[in-house]
Structure formats: C-alpha cells, structure tokens
Length: 549
Image (cartoon, rainbow, N blue to C red; front, side, top):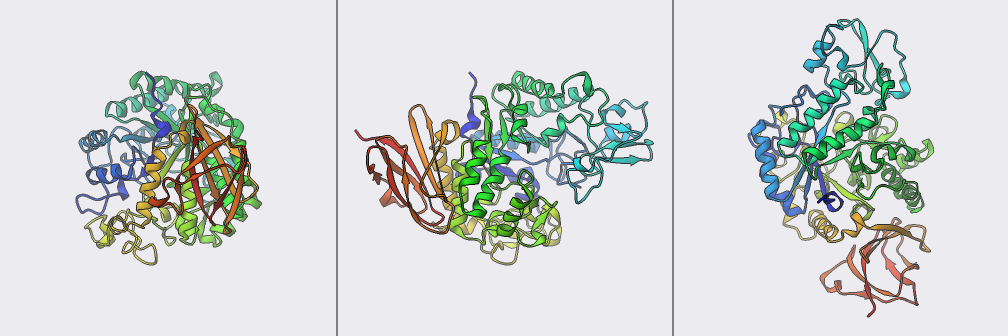
C-alpha cells in the first residue's frame, strides 16, 4: 500500500560538516551526527535532509562532487553512514540525501578523462562547444560568473557550466549519463535512504548545448527517475529544488508520476513581501497563483535554508521593499537578488515576529522545513563571504567552540558565532533546554502541535477573508475535521471578524499567549456563522473546530 508519510513529516535540514564533531579534528562527521539523533527525535523531527557529504574539493559547499559512491573521508566512512541510517531508523527518522547530478566537480575523474578529447568514453558525459554563446542571462551566479561557457585548453573546446566554472554540467541527453544517475540512486537506496532532494532540478531538463536533446523530451527523464525509485523502494520520495514560474510547476509534478515534493519558492518570496509590508495580501496572492497539484504531491514550506533568501520571482521594486525591511545594507545582500541572513537578525531578534513567522510557515498547506539552528534562534556572521554567512557551526553549549568541537578555533571547518547577541555563550542548546521560556522549548511545542494537526499537511485548504488586511486566516480540512490558523503580520493588535465559519465551537490549540489554563477555552459564534477573535500584535492562534452539540 502506498503511503504519503511525507505529508505529515517535519523535515530538518543539516550539513554533516557543521553539525557535530566526534573526533576533535574541527569537522563535523557522521559519528557526531549519530550521537545527536536522540536530540533530534526528542525535538519531534521525523525526517532529515542531508546536504552533500560526498568527496569534494569544497569549492561550493560540497555541491562540486568528485565521487558519487562514497563519503568524504573528513566526515567518516560508508560504514559510519550505514550505522547512522540504522540508528535513524530505530528512532523513526527517515533520511533524504542530496542528489547533485546536473553538474560534477571539475576534479571528478569523469571530467578529467573527458577533457582528453573525443576518444575518451566520458567526453560526451559533458556538454562541449567550439563556438558557444555566452548567454549571461542563464548564469546562476550573475555577480560571480559572466558566461555559462568556459574554454578548456586541454580539450580545445568550451564546456557548459550554469553554476561556477569549477562545476561542468553533465550531458543529461546522453543515455549513459542517465544510466549513471539511476545507478547512483540505486546505490544509496540500498544503503537505506528514503529518497533524494534533487539539486537544481530545472537544469536537469535544460537543453542548452545538448546535441541530442531534440531526440526526446528531457522531462521524461524525471518520470524514469520516479519509476526507478518506485521499483527499488515502496515509499522513497523525490524532492525537487525548482524555483520556477507557476506555469512551469506542472512539469515537475505532471500527473503525480514525477516528483512527490517541491520547494515552495513562490509562497516563500510572497511571504517575505507580506512580512515587509505587514499586509497579508501578497501572501494570499502567492497561494492563489499556485497551480493545483496531484493528490500524491506536496509542497515543502520553508522560512530559510542553506542558500540565500532568493527574491528573483518578485519585481525589482518588490525586492527593494524587502531589502529595506530586512537587509538594508549591501553586505546583507547577495547576487543582486537575495539576502544572506538568518531570520532572527532580519527581525532584529524580535521574539514575537520570529515566532509568528515560523507559526505561519508551519500552518501553510504543505510540509514544514526546519534548518539546523533555527530551533535555538541562531544568527549569522556577515564577515564571512557569500552564503557562508548562514553556514556557521551548530551551537550546542557555552563550552569552547559552542560545544561543536574540541579542536582549536582556527581548525574549525567553519567559524562559530562567538560575539554579540547571537554568540554561542547565550544561544545554545544546553542553555535553552533548561529554560522553559526559551525559543527551543517553544519550537519543540510548535513541532509537536503541528504533528498533531495533519490537516495542515494533507487537508483541503481555503483562505478565510477577514476585515483586517494584516491578518492572514485560512482553514484546512480532511475527513470532516478542520483546523483554522490566524496570523497577524502587523505591530498592532486587533479584533478580527471571522466569517465563513459554520455554527461550531473553536477550540484553541496553539497561540502566542497559550498556557495550560487556556487549553480548554472555547469560542462560540457571534451569530450563525461569524466570530470575533482578538489577536495580539504579531500574534498567531490555531483552532480546531468542534460541534456545538
């Protein structure tokens, strides 16, 4: 029987390299991560997404892969990985791994052989051109690279690279490359993973420079990946990173035979515009422009992840509004289209706004994502270059290096935040576990409550219109059970008139002023089908509907 476990999952994203060091060399590893599984299980996490952990020269945070069939020796061995998978399964935690197959590292043996010329069996694993067009509009990192082509003297030709020039694109139109990708998937499925996060999915079906691409539709390869997955594992999933326009989203879901999950970039960007304006209108618009998706498909909602907060689906004017609110200094911005900060600094560490934002993200239709450190309110380090500002090591305690490692500070794979209000001395797991009012304990309550409300993940949703423009209200229903969430995006408290609700009680289950004494509080309707509900500035309230009988 097919299961849709991912619809009520709580996904936690982490980089093994920056999570926990077990051997004191300054680099996080699989043994350290395995030792932290009880913490993650206690938090309520039931699915981990691991950033790339393959051998890599690490020019791009591990996304420049040298070997798809091994673990970076700095992080451990395949044996350590298998033990980690076993221990995760024992705790009811599934594991998704990054599948980075639109490009390799320039140091991958395939490319080193390919550049020797057309006699190499790997030459056609990549895309070559003698007279390439620069196509600067297609460059993924426009402030870093000027062209999607790079001339290679040894090969005597230019190779395609949408990302850094150290990451040559694979020729997905080559059937041998497709077979290799399936072989990679099969390898990690045999080791127990529950699926893959497909990095840069649009570039898997991009036909630039591929001579044989016209012979078939590259989109069909997505179906082939899904079919292969289903044959090898009954409930493994494919999660695609595809920041595309609404009309392109069906390409990835199709009729439910391609990806099971897709990052919800459109809603994420409209969410931040709504937060900047303190008005729910653009969030409503973002939800309304989403196409309908198959019954077995799901959105993955996120506040922040390991990359920049990209804003490229918004107009220049809208981007500037968000910059002004959350990243007013040029050093806080990146690639001319994004923000390289974590949420707490963006919100001036205003606990009310931070809680409301995560509460909202957790109730939006779909599955919520938590990035490592989100649960303790970690900050960023803008002195680091590029995206590294939001990739500092996990802060476990007030011990040296935030308890991440016993190595000397200069040996750490990434710096630990040691100064200011986000320093590890006061923002760490150990301290917050002992404080019942801490953000960590609030986040644990949020996660547990969300897992008790599967309607948000798999229910039919609808926006509830209110008389307050700053309040976003919506309902999710499944099997005749309904939950309702209200979120006030503004700094002014108000009383919301909530129409469109049938003659039922509203039982509060979670809010910004929730306490044990309020758990059984009910709201009765003002009349046959409307309610008046008070909500604080930056407040949030979740309700479950129950019969008046």
